[in-house]
Length: 281
Image 1 (cartoon, rainbow, N blue to C red):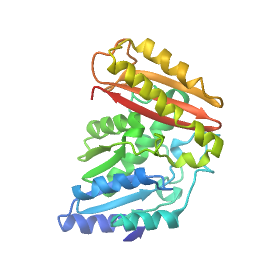
Image 2 (image 1 turned 135 degrees about the vertical axis):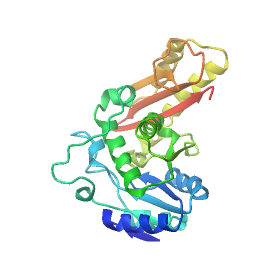
Image 3 (image 1 turned 60 degrees about the vertical axis):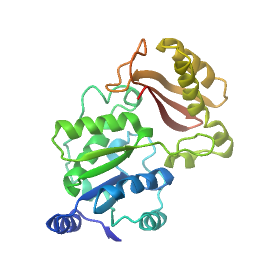
Image 4 (image 1 turned 120 degrees about the horizontal axis):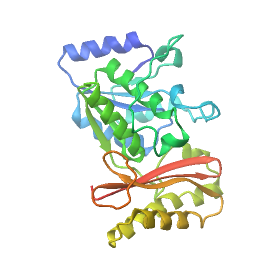
């Protein structure tokens, strides 16, 4: 496995691989890898000849006061995990490599990025779509994998890829969970032991909503009310949002009549967790 730290190094390998007629897969990450990231690697490998894992804590998706500086990092551990799972290269640039002095160009997907997480993190998704567009462009990837845990992000990236004519297949892979249902996330490392015990409440709340749907309830307002009631039973947990939205465009629903997503974000102490459950997919 090779480690590429600069854009010229990356382009050299991409050129050679494409010249040999090999297809390229990409798994974009911010590092501090867990089994969810590794499942993306495992899902992507059969769909390409050469697989690149990018590791880059992207500053443009963090707002002032967020956790950019303390976001967990452990490149040596990540390197071993990526190699063990059979990737061919890690792209590991620094911020100056990806954002030159005076950088001022962003990719914005209108209408999908200002709801759910976008309400409280209004600049987050323009950072996500910008860095993913740059990675698609630099790697010339044929396939790229993302996790369902970040459902809103996957819709934005699909829309961006279609609108900007990126010839890339987007794989959306199932959320990988701990034994108690907590969705795996690098930010779970922030949780104290007490907070970790409370953290599954988000998934349990979404499952409660799913059970109501399966029992025949289609009134989105009633489902949200029951989910919020359940979330408030756990001390030290505060709700950012619990919503019932259309699975295709994230419109807030009054009635569930087709594919929908129960999406939530909660604070457990000072750690923000997100998750979702798909209805009628």
